[in-house]
Each structure stands twice: as structure tokens, then as C-alpha cells.
Length: 119
Image 1: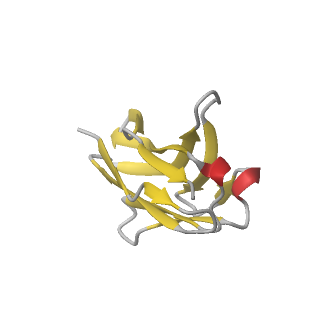
Image 2: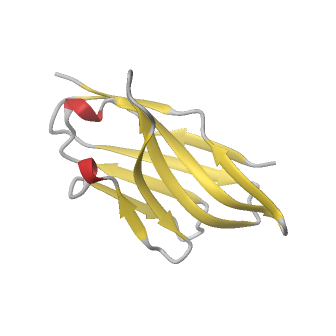
């Protein structure tokens, strides 16, 4: 059974940093891992993604400030967030897409972790 466990959210002052982690289990083969976020009154948006070939994509609003990476074991994805702004305040969701078993596709979401940027 696929499971995603997120950690690392919290309250931080503007200009500060946080690191989010998402540990996945139950996948036979992971195709891509990503972070999305949803702020009140706004649609969920892509923050960053990394695929099995280590190709990386960032949302325009976080380029140059955030960095996504994967563990050597490939089952954990991290999001290093620097120079945080109040507009980064949102619930951050981990997304993992891949195969739970051969021929069994899975697109799973974590429960979300709150990031609040405020003085």
C-alpha cells in the first residue's frame, strides 16, 4: 500500500528558510516526485518536480529560491525553501507518481503540511 509522509512545515519569518521532506513507501517504481501548494482562495499550483531522470521543473514564483532534490534511495523528496516571502504561505502537498506494481499506476498525494511565513 502506497503511503506518503510529509514533515518540515511550520512558522518562519520573512527571509527565513524551511526544508520539507516527503518519504514514500509502497512504490515499485517512481516516475516523478513533486511539491504543490494551495493558498486560501487560490488554486493548487506546482512548486517543483523531479523525475526519474532527475529533470527538474520549478514554478515561476519560486525559481532561484527553492530547490528540490531526491534521496539516494530515491524514495524521499526534499524541498529546500530559502528567502521565504509571505506569499509562500500555503499548505504544501507531496505528489508521487509511479507504479505500485508492474502495470499498476498510482498517483498519490500526501496529507499536506502547513507553511506560514509571517513576522
